[in-house]
Length: 201
Image (cartoon, rainbow, N blue to C red):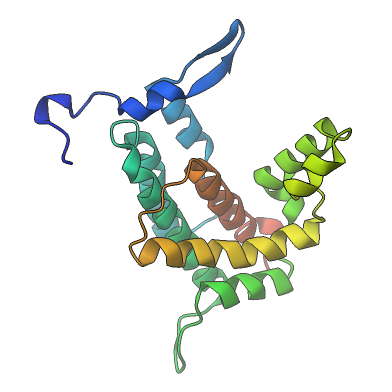
């Protein structure tokens, strides 16, 4: 349903159920929090401008999902599009003389060349922290797959990211609470691709 004109700049009701940690415990999430979360996901200036522009659209979608939460999967789709563009540019895959590779083989090629490092992914470091926190709950560690090695984690990403993109591209009414995580993973991967340390690989 289209939002009423006089409610356009009002918070989407779904955000009433989200809280953030505060010095005094917990408080309701605000648009300032939404902005800060998006602002943290910044691409390196070493990434080409065209890629940064595509990715910035994903960041703006994260912010404006404050007013319409169903923009979240659009933000994910845009972030993954920026990642695919970054992979094509970085790997020199312009399709000249042959069919362009799709996202999955592009990710696998980047992994093969050593351009993806799990330890530089915020999501992997978070999982390591959770593994330590739940060390006395091996059942929970196993259920959440927190015991994945770095290699297992990045290989799983190389499959799950294209699967998510395909799900979104085919009009699935998917809506995940982890949209920011998807945008964050895309951000970290793009930054790794254009890090000066990776040049020449």
